[in-house]
Image 1 (cartoon, rainbow, N blue to C red):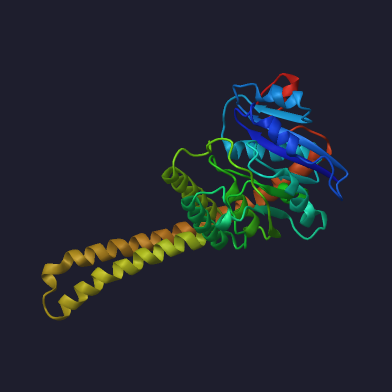
Image 2 (cartoon, one colour; image 1 turned 60 degrees about the vertical axis):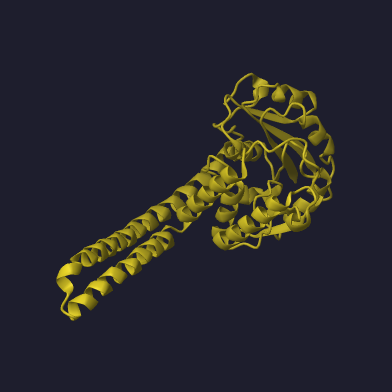
Length: 329
């Protein structure tokens, strides 16, 4: 059984050696362990540092495309390299590499498809109180959207079986963490968590520059992912809300009409009628979106089979090529 540990990087030449040194070389139940670095358009020689430190696979983007794209590139490259299990970790050594054995154990034992490293957000001394609260609230929302019981939804420390990785298609431009969980839950994958340790931060996060930005980007990502897999529910709920609001001015007009004063309140009838029409249109959009969603499921099934054929033939992923060959994606 082959384990590939992938590390998305952006200008991580200084921190990467520390992270690599902490990674395990042997794990019970794993025959071979390989490392994969995804250089997301770094300008500080990250790829060269990775090769000097013996990284088995180095994939490079020509420009910085973001964490979500780097994660998906890594998944494709790891599958092409024959990974049976893929572990994703951060280049800044936030996660304790010694816990990778615990992270992959549920997959090695064949009772989980996706395993999330739970950083113990409630009591983690490396997190500020505000960050703890936001993480807990965000995880609660993701639990609701995904139908999973993951308590640290935005943890990037996670293990994925080959079968699950072949069914994951990240389309977000921001981050993969919440979208991946929503996909996994809606596709009925076996998702679990294991407690993991963290190290003190080596530098500020590069994923967001402020808490409001993080909240806004995460909220948009979750809403888009949820709507993608539950379009009928989203549009029907929006339509019913509009219709219910529309009934209020209509009821107001009917009341005044019944007491003989309806002439001065026609605007209430017009407003209510518009809202009712919007509600009906939203429901119709929901039906169409649901049909489109069913078509997406068929396309994903086709893509999954194409992936298996390509990986079986040893084809390299088209979205990126190894930097060691002197090319970039």
